[in-house]
Length: 75
Image (cartoon, rainbow, N blue to C red; front, top):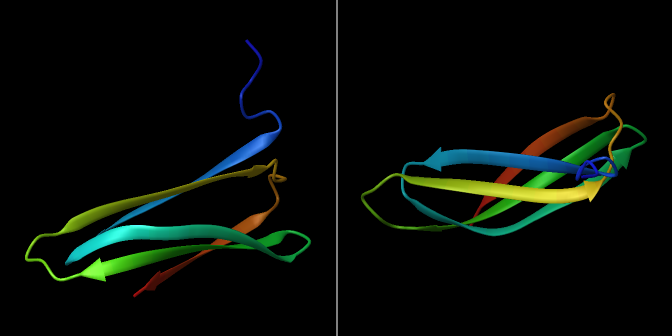
C-alpha cells in the first residue's frame, strides 16, 4: 500500500477550554516561503464543564524546514 502522506501533510492541533467550545473552522495561510499560519476558530458557549477540541487540516506536502504557527481565536 502506498504511503498515504507521501504527497500531503496532516496538521493537527488540540486543546482544552475552561468552558464549552466547538470547532468553527480551521485554515492555513502561507506567510512566507517557509512560514505558515494555522488558524483555528472556536465557537464558545457557557457551561460549567471543561471542553476538549481538535482541529485537523490536510495540505500539500510541506518541507520539513517549514514552520507553522498556531493562532486560536475564540468567538
